[in-house]
Length: 135
Image (cartoon, rainbow, N blue to C red; front, side):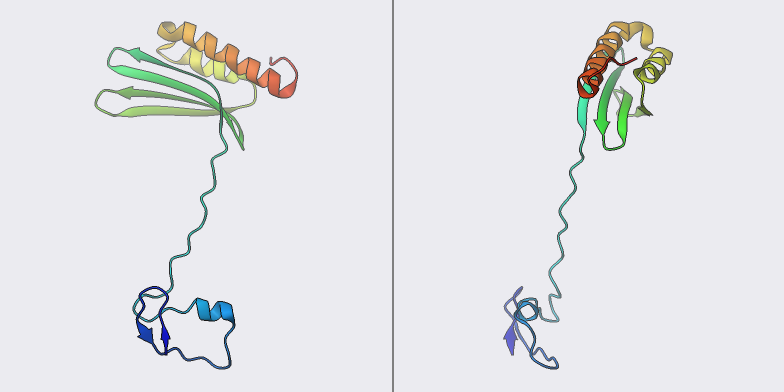
């Protein structure tokens, strides 16, 4: 007879041969079963390089440029008041690709200044991390 570690109920545990101390510590009764295994969550390694948010009438445009393990990404999300949203994600290596996508956006004329400032911050961050000017 042994007391279950999870619920304290006494149960009969049978085995062939003498179990190790680790095996004894892991015994649970038929009522509770083994404790769930908790796996540590992996941290998302993202570094925010630049962002801006702008209200455009009934919508809010939010643009974030970040670096993660796979490279540099631009994420643009237009969200309406009712909660519906449209999200574009562009992985890129050169800032020109991000500039082209943002310039093609229908809201570009209304957020041109914010786009310019965000791209300047992006180029500075890339230059600082690589030690050279970004094209």
